[in-house]
Length: 142
Image (cartoon, rainbow, N blue to C red):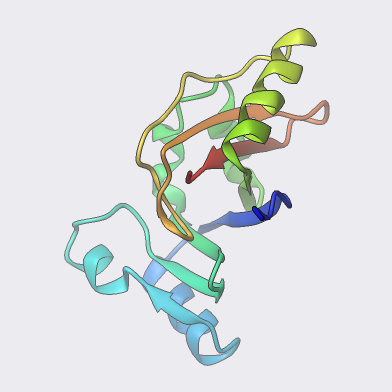
């Protein structure tokens, strides 16, 4: 039996200093750092901290805001603490979500492939906004 429950994959937080933020979340909050060494070496664009085996907080440098071009106006979210919320879905639910959004003329981005998330690289993902302008990402791993 396959578990088809929607899950929270990751939340991206804007931070001024990702290394300091990782230290806070590791030391004060007790979350495990992920990719911190890779970030410090310039090999990945941001570090993360693990909430559980399926969920991360990504600590996105505020300086990355200008590169948020995948969805028009996404860079404007840099004044807010949260960049986007990601929903991880089974492949069929992922397709159904995209279909519902398109039926309602909600703009969606092109697919991204193999983007890093809580369970490693996702097969596909895309972004969209809710009516209040909050940016959401949908992804699937299967």
